[in-house]
Length: 374
Image (cartoon, rainbow, N blue to C red; front, side, top):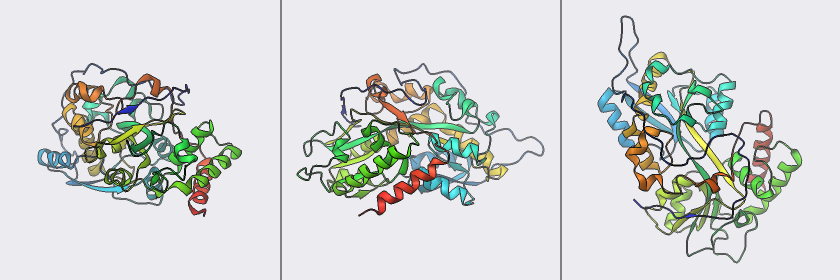
């Protein structure tokens, strides 16, 4: 397995908007049951559904895990995909049913809890919750893991082809594009309203969760100006376009660039000197799930929390695991990779995206104006 070279830039100290501790070294793996047995069925107890559907980001879960789970529990898992949190949220708000599991990011979990869209987890069916690192058992958006279980976490920055373009140590590489640069017109930004605005706001020196209209207008104009140097907006294939050499630079998520480096070892990743985004994705059960689907979904969540399966997941998608018990399975080479587990100086300049209430619609309107601008 190849690893990216994490580019260290000059630290700019920012206060994390959600107080989650930095990764640090490997935590001791607690001794907990593997949780391989399904819940005991008493008289009148429901049986788990024979099939469940997970609504997930693309290429985010090893298909072999689905096959192994089905072989062990005789429950088939079907995967459907979304490109960003807003797409996930809009689909469920629109009444979409049939999903037993979803994988929203931290700020989207807060919105879904507030709107009553998530089922409460039955911890009796999740003995492997004890495998989570302490800092992921009391996350601010869902204390005590009442509705969701942390799935993976990572950062958002810039991937690029080393040797083809200069190291993009600043967000200026996107927001002040050089027409003479080989990356001009061969760069993408995430097709994601909050991630797009976060990059612009960080470059301007603002809080990424600001609701100040003037600051957001300034960020909008910056995003519009950046379009001249972009090939487009892409949340699904940006890493593949980089690996193929069609593009030379991309705004995106660290693990995707790590995976792409398997195809192109010249890909490198940097969190710009102004800072970046840190996020936690979570696995949750929609309230629309039937009792049978909910039970099968909890069995699958518990399966993902097994140390060997959690490690298998991280080694597939190259994202950091919230599972402390998995760290002995992951090995020191993976745990010491700064592109996966950022050092303290990088963690100190990262911000979490938070829900902004009614201002969410303002962000979306301004993003639509960015994308439609000539």
